Amino acid sequence: MTDHLPATPAWPPRSAPRLFVGDTLSEGLSLALAGPQAHYLGKVMRAGPGDAVILCDNQTGEWLARVTEAGKRTLVLAVERQLRPIEAVPDLWLCPALIKKQAFDWVLEKATELGAAQIRPVVTRRCVADKLNPERALAIVTEAAEQCARTALPVLAEPVKLETLLRDWPEGRALFFADETGGAPAAETFAAHAGPAALLIGPEGGFDDTERAAIRAHPAARAITLGPRILRAETAAVAGLGLWMSVAGDWGG
Image (cartoon, rainbow, N blue to C red; front, side, top):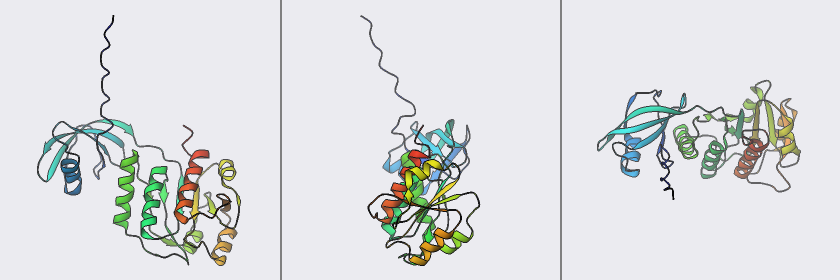
C-alpha cells in the first residue's frame, strides 16, 4: 500500500496579510514600515520574523515579502519575488452623486471590490453633501483593495458639479445614465457597447428635471433602467457596476 505524502501547503499562505505601500517594489528591496501599518502587522496580525506579507505598490503589481525585523514601533520587510503583475482593470468609471457619509463610504468600498477603474463623485442639486474627505476616501478604497486582492487602486477624483462633469466629458466614452424615470434595459445596453464607459448614479431623491434634461441632451449619454423598482442611490451604484462587469467587464474570465 502506497503512503500518501501530505500536500505541500500553498506559499504564501492565503491568510498572509496584504498591504499597499508607497514605495516602488522590486526584488531584494528592504522596506521599513512604521505607524499604522507597522501596528497592523505587528500587533493585530502578530507578524514576526520569517512571516509572509503580500505587498502591492499600485505600480508594478503584487510581491511576496518576509518580516526580517519586528520592533515595538517598526517592522522591516525583505521583498523576495513578484507574485502577479499589476492587473488590467476594465475601463469603467463610476460617477456617483454624493450621498450621506456612511452610505457613500459603502459605495467607495464596493466600487473598489467590483473593479471600477475610476470613481468620480458628482455634486447635484439634491445632494446632501458637497465635499469628500480625500484622505478618508483613499483609506477606504485602499483597505477594500487589500481585502479583495486588487493590485491596482481605483483612481479617486475630486467631486465636481454635474454641469462641469457634462461640460468636460471626454469624447468616445459612453455615459450610462441610470434614470429612475425609464430607459433601455441596462444589460442589453451594456452588452451592445464596446469601449470606454461610465455609470452615472443620482443622489437621494434623484436628479431634478433640469438636470435630467441636461444629461439626456448630452451626446454621450444613454439612459438605462436597472429594473422595475426604485433603488436607493447606493444600491443602484452597486447593482449597475455588478451588471456591467458581468456582461461587459472582466467577470467572464
